[in-house]
Image 1 (cartoon, rainbow, N blue to C red):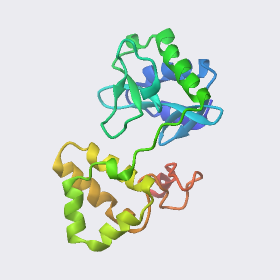
Image 2: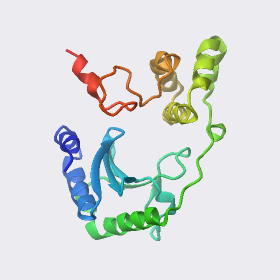
Image 3: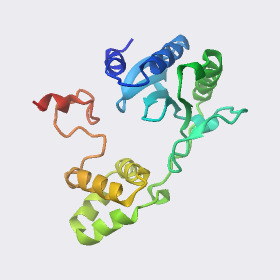
Length: 211
């Protein structure tokens, strides 16, 4: 078992029992456990299969190639419009977690990965650019140039984060929060403190700087 995942579960204020059970189910499917993107991640031969996650209203499993899975009962949920391939199983109680049902999806996901099928990557041009970001660009050409100097993957990461906010006020706050990070050439998940052991990704090591 991965220590970072254990620490993540120990510090949860909600959904601890549910995610502990989902962890057990994933491990029983002979997947390897890791901690990526601040969530428990389960892999097959070093290929990412699924993530466990918790939100205020529910917790669940995100299948990274979920769009390719068999879903006869139509229970898989598309997280957002921009996340075309990811599909989620969501739970609001421990009683909803049925091991054999979940394993059928996990084994199907492993089968998909074994097939070697690769999903076409969505171009940056296909992502919506929020009007709030466009307004920032109009006011600051250096900020605009810095954003478009980022790699396509880093641009996508910011666009996903900004567009997921429902209210314009929240979008503005998110853009303002990451403006300097963009000007400095960093992606939304990049390490900016230099302490991460998973560079260029952030692993949360910056938290030790807070007294």
